[in-house]
Image 1 (cartoon, rainbow, N blue to C red):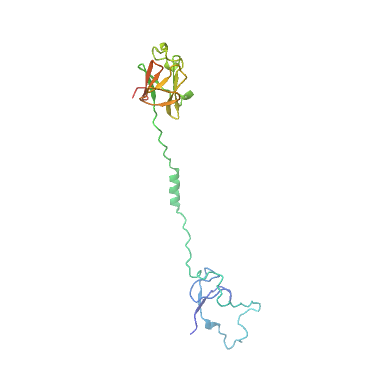
Image 2: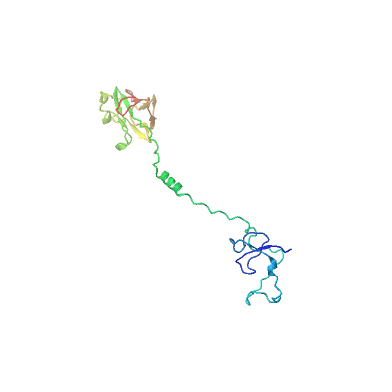
Length: 223
């Protein structure tokens, strides 16, 4: 009984190696092999044995493969299933992604605005906001325009003409002594460098001016 083999139907004789199992040609990767009966290759009595039928004169002889030689192509390529092509992203999904990219992003919440003032002899002296010209703040002294609303301030001999200054640094309020004669105190301690202050702090300029730091609302009233 003859063994059934499978050959490539499009390859020239000797171009494509035969296979004992059904699969795909190793040379023509997408061409399926067809069944071939070796009995069909036996020459008939009318055909001379030394003259191959339908063989062109200039056909090159096919060299036999040595025993045990590994074919150049991958032997599993004929039976390996073709890898499916990656499906493109649906148009609808791309449109949804574009719409999400165009949505306005939430802005970070701004920190609450803190408004501070000095309570001096019953008078509120608001500390100017940081965004104002000169950096805001408040100047303390007998000749400072910021203190003109305080009654009797000009008669305080212990207070220097330009005694201290309140100024904002990175959103925080600091008090700085301007080389006054009698000093500036924060909660009873004399300061030598800018000191951070806030609502509830008690300040004393020289020996005769006690003030308190208070928080006010947008209308200038104490909270």
